[in-house]
Length: 325
Image 1 (tube, rainbow, N blue to C red):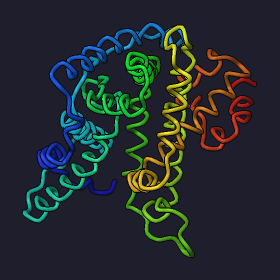
Image 2: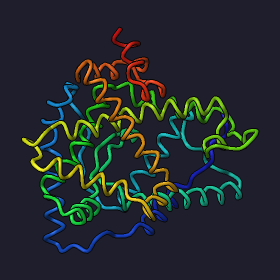
Image 3: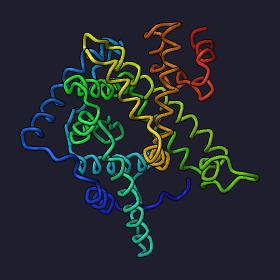
């Protein structure tokens, strides 16, 4: 396994928390409203997600409403926990001064990236923490619900439905956390690749070996499933649960797919890849549900062998023939 670079967690948290903007100006009453509203929405999302998904596994872990700096610190902790477990131990502790300096630089870089993401993430399930939990980022929800001019109670519940689905996915498939960490371990098991012969087609071609690229694409297919499934299920709850769900979806997708500066930032942060995961995964889920229903789709949570491959995400009929023949 290639040597895991040291990342100074303290520097990452400090830099990220200092750089992330505080969020929209809110009065004490407005802060209390969004925090209390998200807490209520998180609880209210449990039953409809369980009903529409049929996953049937009681989800565990706390549901927390947090600010942006807390989100940054939680993701620093999760990243280092995941990398440590994937490497078969814990993050290395440097002894040489140059390694300590490099670790501080790595930490600053991680913190800076998380500071940008921390102003954009509405909610997140954090499965790779030692004690997984669901978080909702109050200032980001407040900012987006204002910008989109949607019903606030509906929007808060809609956001919670997505993250609650992730929480129940991991509860239904307790092997999933270890499987994804194992996949990350395989990515760490070889030295990074170099520029391929001929013209490079993507950054992934440059920084990965052929073996790593296979694993990377396999992880991407799993993430497409998880994100697309949650994106589809949050709309399937229907107007009985979220009366303005169609309006919220239309406005949210229009905002998500904006061009110009937003598109450039998404590309730089890799968010364009995540948006593709939402789109491709949701298309896969809808195609499978149309043929075999939600229960037929839910067999993907039975074992790693049931997960769709990259080719199957692109062509759901191939997965259906393999799994439901």
